[in-house]
Length: 187
Image (cartoon, rainbow, N blue to C red; front, side, top):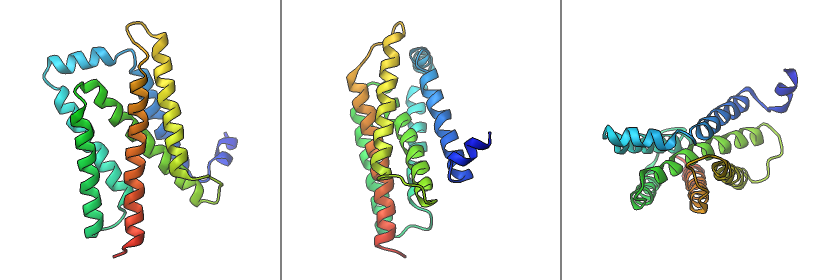
């Protein structure tokens, strides 16, 4: 067990990787149930509400990670722009199940990015945390689709891989832009 403590640079990093693993397990374990769950939510008239709840949680996570103190005018403008980009992207997707990729992989990307930043800030070598987080998230999104090749009633869809990559890019870009604005225009 002590070997695990030596691998992580801090307790916070270990916690972030733990949450990342939990989210990944949730994504992968829901692959077989996704259509059933979507059908149930649709039948109950809750699929749109579930989508909006996910969107609100993503926006909150991006803003919480990017803004650590009271935001200035520039940060508020950037935050609203990020929200607008997510809304436009999500509203262009006509199938609610496709929207879930944007939500799931945004959360995953933010957790990975935050863990890599924590590791880097604690003196461990991490080459370009934003790019590495996008790469790791993209590979996990590809693995998600490859797993679907093995499941009955599921298909491999390269477009889903692109949605996963887009989600990672959007989340990491938003968080990085907010952090940059805070440093560029301090209060």
